[in-house]
Amino acid sequence: MPTIILSTLNARYFHSSLGLRYLFANLGELQTSAAIREFIITQRPLDIAELLLAEQPRLIGFGVYIWNAEQTAQVVALIKQVRPEILIVLGGPEVSHEWEDQPIVWLADYLITGQADLAFAQLCRQCLNGNSPAEKVIAAERLPLESLASPYPFYHEEDIAHRLIYVEASRGCPFRCEFCLSALDKTAWPFPLDPFLNEMDQLYQRGVRHFKFVDRTFNLNREIGVRILEFFLERLDERLFLHFELIPDYLPESLKTRIVQFPLGTLQFEIGVQTFNPAVQVLISRTQDNRKTEENLIWLRQNTHTHLHADLIVGLPGETLDSFAAGFNRLAALDPHEIQVGILKRLRGAPIARHSVAFDLRFNPYPPYNLLCSSLLDFATLRRLDRFARYWDLIGNSGRFHHARPLLIGHDLFGRFMTLSDWLFVATGQTHQLALDRLFDLLYRGLIEALAVGELAAREALTADFHQSGLKSRPAFLRSEPIALQVNKAAKHPVHPARQTRHHPPDASNRI
Image (cartoon, rainbow, N blue to C red; front, side, top):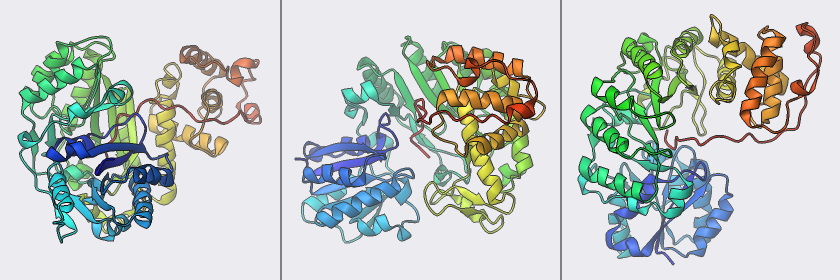
C-alpha cells in the first residue's frame, strides 16, 4: 500500500500527466512508498474516491487543471468526508492563482503554488515526519532545471503503448500575451540539451514514436530547435510523429532547411496566430509581425509536408465581430490544415482580467471560464460563434470533407460558414452527438439550402468524401434519387437519422 499517492484526472484516457511524473521522479527516498494513479474526468468521483481510499494512503497530491477542477473538488470532498485524517495536497495552474475563493482549497490541507517539482517532496518529508508546516499555502520557487530528476523513465509500457507522451525541452515564455498564464513568466529557460536528448533517445529505444512537445516557444532558440530536429531526422521511421508549438513570425533558414526534410505525416506545428488585428495585439501586449506570420505560413504550406494547426481567439478586448471575421478570412486564405477557433477564457491569474471593466468582459463563473458577453459581442453573438467553432471543427478541420470544403469558399468564407452554422443549429438543435452519416446528409442539405450550392456539385463532392471516409452506412442522400434543384422543396424534407457519439481523433492538447 503506497503512503503517498500522486493523482490527477486527465481529460481523456490517452492523455498522460507529465507533471505527476516530475513530482514522482523528484521524491528521492520517498519514491518506494509512492504511486501514480491517473483517472479520467468521465469517471464518477465516488468511484475514484473509492479506489484511492482502498489503498489507504496517508497523503494524496492532486494536480488541478481547468478541465478537472470541479470533478477533483468532488473527489477531495468525498475523501475528506470518509477519511479526514488523509492529508490532501493540491497543485497545478488552476489553484496557483486566485486560490482564496476556491472551495477545493478550503477542503485541502496544503496548496503548493507554482512549480512544485521539489517543493512537494519537501512537504511530504515534513508531514510524514511529524513536522507539518503551519502555513497552508506554500509558494514554490523556480529552481535551476538541471537540478530536477528526469520524469521520462516513469512513463510505463502501458503509457507508451496507449497514451500520448509529453516532453519539454524548455519552460516559460518571454512574451506577455495577456490571455495566457505564460504572461507571468519572465523568460523562457531551456533544459540542458545533451541530457534531454539522451532521455529522448531512451524513450525512442523503448518504442515511443509520438512525441508531444509542450514547450510554448519551441522555435525561440534556433540552435536548440535545430539540434532537436536533427536528432529526430536521424531516427526517422514510418511511425514517428512530432508535435511542436511555434512562434508564428520567426522561422530562420536553419530551421527551414531541417523542416523540409521531414516526410508527410511526421510533423505537426501548432501556431498561435490568435488575432491579426494590430490594435488588439497592442491592447493585449502581444508582439507579432503579421507580415512575417503570413510569409511563414505560406512557406510552410507550399514547401513542407508539415500539418499546420493555427489558432484564433474570439472575444479579445477590442476585437469586433467584423474584425474577427476579417482575421479568420485572412488566416483561411493562407490555407492551414486546421483553424482552431477558441472563445476567450479568463484563466485564473492571467492579466486579461485588467480589461474587464473597459470592455465589460463577462465570463462564465464555472470552468472553462469562457467569455459570455462584452461591450463588443453580446451573449447571442458569442453563442453563435461558439457553435461556429464547433461546426467548423466537425467540417472544416476534420479532414473528412476534402472535396466539399472548397464549396464553402467564397469572397467571405467566415460569412458563408456562419450562415451554414446557423442553418445547422436550426436544423438539429445540437452541436454534439452528430453521427457521421447524419453529418453528411446535413452538409448536403446545408450546402444546397443555406449556401445555394448546386445539387450536382454538392452530391459529387460529398460522394467522393464518403468513399474516402471509411463509413459503412450510406448517408440518406446517396440512397435516394437526386432531388429537384428547387431549394425550397428540399427544405420541406427534414432528416432524422439516429444519434450517436462522434469519435474524436486524438486531441494533443492537455494544456490551457
